[in-house]
Amino acid sequence: MLTLEEFKQLDALTIGRAYPDDLMEKILPFYNLLRESSEKLRTLDLADSPPALVYRAGSVK
Amino acid sequence: MNSDEIRALTLIDVADALREGRLTSMEVTRAAIDHAEATADALKTFVTFMPEAALERAADADAARARGEIWGPLHGVPVAFKDNLDTAGIPTECASPVLKGRVPTENAHVVDQVLNAGAVSLGKLNMHEFASGGTSINHYTGSPRNPWAPDHITGGSSGGSSTAIVAGIAYATLGTDAGGSVRIPAALCGHVGLKQTHGPVSNRGSVFNTWSGDHVGPHTKTVADAELMLKVMAHHDPLDSTSVEHALGSMPLMPDLAGVRVGVPETFFFDDVDTEVEAAVRETIAKMKAAGATIVPFTLATMDIMMAARMLTGSDGYLYHAKLLEERGDLYADQNLRYRLLASQYLRGKDYARAIRARRLVVSEFVSLFDSIDVIAAPTTPTAAYPIAATEITVAGKSIDLTQPTSTGLLARNTSPANYTGHPSVSIPVGRTTKGLPIGFMLTGAHFDDMRLLGIARVVEQLVDYREVAPWFAAATPALAAS
Image (cartoon, rainbow over all chains, first blue to last red; front, side, top):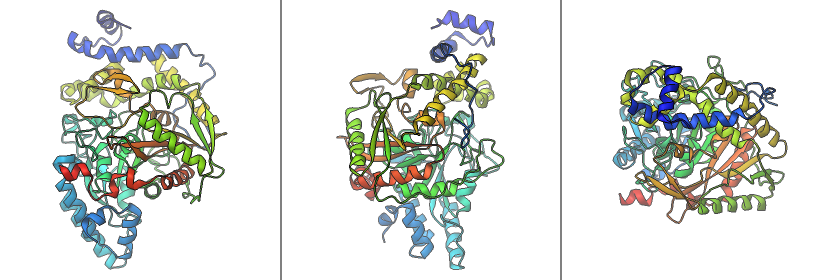
């Protein structure tokens, strides 16, 4: 999980919002939850799994 | 029939009485308005209450009936809408100061269906800000209150939609369910809440917190009432790309559960569930077996994937909020919602794409599961309602810090899989805790098998003594009578 300093570096290298430290500190726990979930999914082999957004009768199997 | 007796009627019964002229819409609407006003401070059900407009519409309904006109199956019936469903000319602010003054020019498609069926709108219902949480705790509007215990949460996000049902104010209300927001308050307040298959009910005109798995669903007293509402609500909307044209049919009237295969999960859904909740749910499953059902234990391998991927796909709500966050981020009553949305900006595209692909794995496993079962039976929520002021609760012997971001998914853990996969799912009340708080039982069915799901739920409903578990059977709940 990222520290505040690492998160600020990530911001600077990506979208560059440069929010005040106190706001970055509030966002960080929520970002770390997303990061944790992302890392879980990176272990999966999804090459043969097409995206699924909408489910229509008979189209999902 | 006095006003308390009128308010205790089901949707089906009041609609029949209105159609047959045994009651007038003015009588029914006046009873609803009087009780809404009497409980306004205690329950905080509405954010926009419209008694004059409702009485005017009720008078029109009565005049129409006198001319022999019946507008539809909800002719003259008082209903109400969650504050994130667009209503033309009426504020629709998602119970948030961020949208203060937002007045749509058109009704949501589903609101049109309900009004075209003849319903009388009482107004807009209180909710969790932007439908973004499972409690309905709202420091801007004042949290809606659980009629069984007004210092307890209703559950959410459609809390006011449930309060209006169990307090006997409206006969049906609409909520939205992106992770359980119809079924959770239905479970915690003690009534029926339905999230139908994704597609048959249009989402156009619903202000989404996320596009991934949101549904508009009905809150009602009984399963039969839910069937009526689903029939009214389900109309293909060519202007909603997710709308599906599909005839759902009618709920089968089953005498028992012979031939019904009830899937009982051995993992996930019963993990870390409050002892009293689990006991009530397992007792109901035993009643289903006694009524002829075959019990089929099963496990799901993709639930961890689902929980991770759902968090990522849910980040698409940022797109709606981006400008609001930039221009008035300080106004969010729940600043944690603001922080969560801002965090979504940092999600990498390839991780979001991976989450979309992972969704197929989960959906495929669920779809295959329904080859061998007809319904999944599980607790709707891991716990009953808890105090609004609580910062920490204990569930199944584990302490949960409600101030931590990780606690936000507690109540939605069991309900959210059906949002992710699009399967129909219904919560019905099956018991009460020793504190007297309702316990919800969730049945989830196969895609587009909504009516069979409701047919099975209706049998279960008959196996349960609603006089013990559903507060709407009393004209006023004990807690309200004492307040």
